[in-house]
Amino acid sequence: MVRIGCWFLPSDIIDACGLKCPLPVLKMEKRLASMVSGATLTVLATDPMARIDIPLFCRQHGHACSLEAAADTIRFTIVKG
Image (cartoon, rainbow, N blue to C red; front, side, top):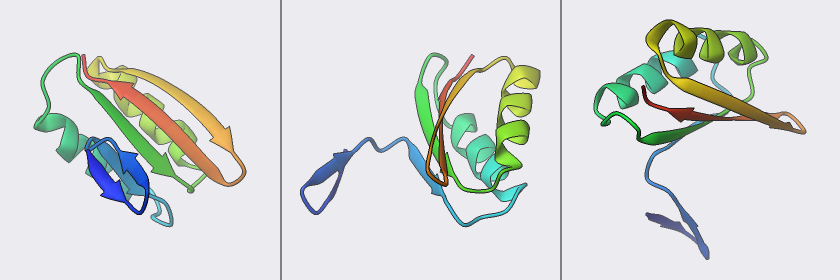
């Protein structure tokens, strides 16, 4: 866990807000490579293309992916396959 102010965030979170694709996907791919199967990764992104690129990458590589959108930020929850 990482402490930010009074908030604790899981260590397996990527804040890709403000980055344009393909950077969110590349950061996610690098982190997933170091994780064990079944581990969960959260990716935060603001680029609208991430809605297409991240789920597509996950489907192609056998990872489960769900997304939630709030305001301008998209939150992806990925479970490594």
